[in-house]
Length: 291
Ligand SMILES: C[S@@+](CC[C@H](N)C(=O)[O-])C[C@H]1O[C@@H](n2cnc3c(N)ncnc32)[C@H](O)[C@@H]1O
Image (cartoon, rainbow, N blue to C red; front, side, top):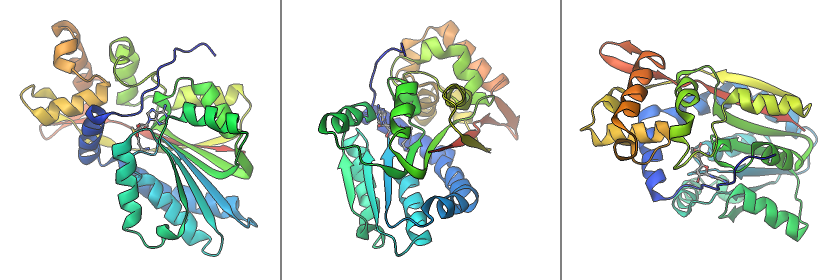
């Protein structure tokens, strides 16, 4: 696959914007409520049936807010089955946040966590070089597939690590929501500082179909109040705008004409206005790929 290579685990500038985005968007709450209440309980029961051990791999796990909850659900579904977890994440700051969450949870402390402070590409190279192709029951990629060098290689390799009856979970922005419209229109201007390639659900699904992989997609409605993004004097509004556009210096690096076009599109085609607020439509897709 000939996609350009650029590995982009979060540095402190991105962590700062990501944290503000999470605080404003409530994205984790939305994802977790769909995963824990509807999507995963039945999947986990089917996946773990008759297994004497369960192995989980997290890729681009960030601060672990989502993953500690999915692992806790797996643990409570199979309280007598030993679980191991490998976490691959290149940001030290976010990995420390993840460790701090585990330190607060006595049940999770019973699970051995192996920390791999690196990108998913480097982890792939490492395990191939060591010839240690550990297999997993559940592999999670939550909002990280935009950052890998190559979508196809990443999915194919990690899918090959699934055990019999395992699941690869890919959570991404859904196609045909406001965020997708924005990025499709301005991808060239946006793909400089962070996101390697815009990869909403349709792009992931097109690849799965091309490989004949069995999957199911669950769409999770979500929106974010982005009113403050339209106030250039709001420091937080600028942070949010920079996270949404993947551009670390929105007001410095884009021309006034492009900025005006982006803000206009964001308000008119990607959002709805309600009670003086601009509400950005950011649907999420949870794609479960079968072994
Ligand atoms: C949007 S955050 C999502 C974090 C977490 N999964 C969550 O949902 O909170 C993207 C994460 O992917 C990580 N990341 C970026 N490039 C990566 C790569 N090539 N391999 C693995 N992780 C990567 C970043 O460091 C960051 O933690």
